[in-house]
Amino acid sequence: MEQKPRWLNILDTLTAILFVVSVFLVFFYAPMERTMGAVQKVFYFHVATAWVGMLGFLVAAVVGVFYLIKGERKYDIMGLAAIEISLIFFFIAIIMGSIWARPIWNTWWTWDPRLTTATIVELIYAAYMMLRQGIDDPDRRARFGAVYAVLGFVSVPLTFISIRMLRTIHPVVVGNSDPGAEGSFSMTGPMKTAFFFSLFTFSVLFVDLFWHRVRMGKLAAKVEELRLKITA
Image (cartoon, rainbow, N blue to C red; front, side, top):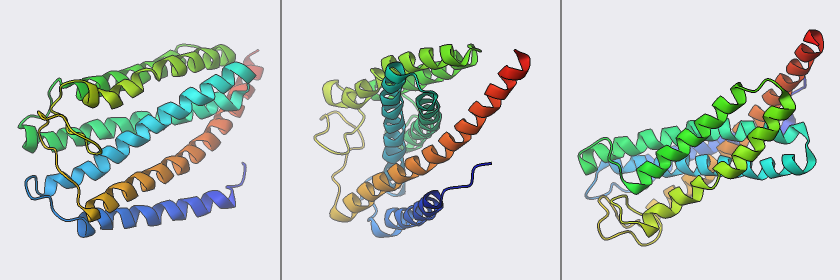
């Protein structure tokens, strides 16, 4: 088995430190929001996990283009890794949004444009996983997966701009919010520090998990190649 890279060990340690600092900033440094109270703390991680989800989908689209151009298996492995991570983090973002919405909107769920588009994105990429499971040939699976990842990414920016272009009750954290938004608030200096540090921390976490998942993907690809040779 390939030895774990030294830089990956360093990245693991750095990620753990950043996460501890981020938790400290959110719960002990950033002040309590006057109206929402403790539930407002959820938003620091809600936005960060949603950011990781969108980041991974972007990475999958980019490496999908590279695969279609070069046809190298490593790009397929990277695309799958990015989408697997993003699916989990985007789902966590949706769950955290529901936890925040219950006391603020008095409901766990409403078919608001942002929530609806986010759900569509999650289902689109869940279908990507189902598509891959239904194709046995590695090259054909990688080609179909790359095309799907590129086309599926169209749904991601729609989720981001939905609360800026459509009438919605979902607040805009950075920028001007819709007048009808429920739960919007202005961030103080410490809140901004905790917010942007959380975004940075989760970005590093994505890189760390992505590196680990790609290493696992390469091993899985070798096992699949051996299986195909045996059964051929």
